[in-house]
Length: 296
Image (cartoon, rainbow, N blue to C red; front, side):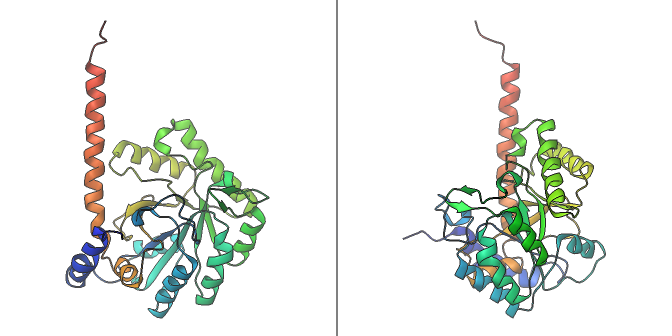
């Protein structure tokens, strides 16, 4: 039997009730939900927080909840413009799907059509080919299928070429990962690509890297980008570092409802503190190593 999830307990028992009285003004925050694969494939991850799959029946329940609660879906550009203009975005949600798994076509799209919802898929372009690429036991979309989804109103953004941890690359490699993926999608679909999704955990504790990445995204012609920073988007967030809410098979209706209403936003701060502490420790160790003379 799995131990209770502390993040879920804290969200449902403490944070969500407090948000009803202490939360920001309604309509000033927009949840951007982060899905990956709509399947039973666990991808080797057993801990509920790190799972990137949502079982088809659970995904259907999520969409029914949104539809019954009166939510409408928005594109990222439309959402950013609305926040900057100070519009009331109550009951607005953005649906995003990372990587480009084929199960979006088979298991997510029919449900979205029933609910009248749309979404944005972020493609790691090396995994999207003319014939289906299979990795970790799951197929990726083909370009033909991507174009079929585009005809159905689905938007597409860049998720790099090879899905690397960008901080492990030199600037020229980062420029290639961003620019080449954007170029490929635009060439295949014949439309501009405005949005980017950062792969892996986002290094918000590294100010120098964030400034570099923001400049590079602007230079490549992107208008916005989403991250794995936890929370709902507001006009106070940079359009290149928008937070999202991870969703998977372990999100039942009460937990998803709490996330939509801001009850999960609290977790961003302890996670950022942890990242900052680890970053500072790494910097101190690096400085100490550089100051230590070579021993003979």
